[in-house]
Length: 342
Image 1: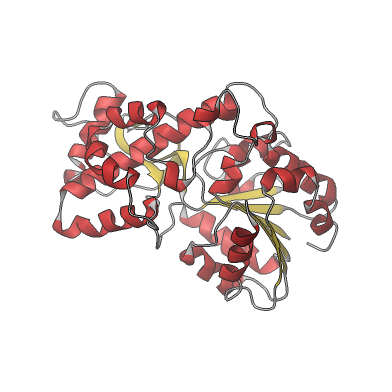
Image 2: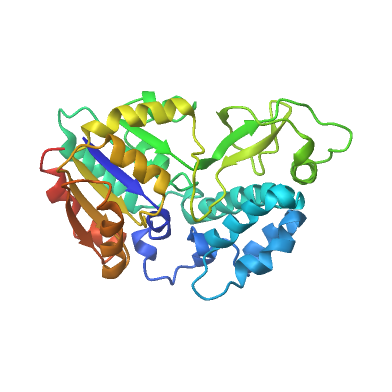
């Protein structure tokens, strides 16, 4: 079985015709984690829609050297027990990130059809798949680039179960998706009203007074503050340095655990290999002596991914690939891996 693991770099370098960073829609390029709180006009306009975000933006945007956005957000999460305002601010971060990724992906590839690297990768997989049962994708991204590619080959994503039950591919979005929500199961109290943006801001302001949100459902709106007339929150994980929980349905995790022992080939794309909770899952369930190719933008970065995975994949054969996703696709480097047993 083949497993493709996609990180933020796979989305950033997703359209081969725009790999040179000179596109007319460059301001809509899907961002890396450290670019989520940019001072670009598009980003500032969305930050202004969610005022609870504004007090934390300066620290997220102007960080000490060597500090990442994930480091800063991890510190904010740790603040919550002794500073209640952080819960409101981090709820606003969820709404902001959901709105930002939604707007960027609309401009980047959804408003009109555009060829993506993920489409080409799926095409190569489909050609090589033959009688093999299926391949699996794991992503930590919130966007829908993988869904967009798989839909070209007949995969459907109408319900939350379609990610794991429908067709030749399974897709595991371990940190959530722009079109996933969790409902609080309560209608709007008098303190929360207005349009969907006002409702989102009301949810952030009163987050500590609301019940725990329910299971993940598939639903698209921006911002997704209402689901079936009940208050709702985007089902996306706060991007922190040491993520300890998944933001995906339990049924998805169960299927992932059942499939990992069958994986013989792994392709990682634009992923740093830093999600320890997933690495531990991979190490617990994956077989020995599998083939792994790590695709990154830079030889040192690709080698670092291999190094991060080595303790968890015993006896694996690692191959770093540093020229990036677009070059990997153009040179059809995946074809050799797809022609061996997977």
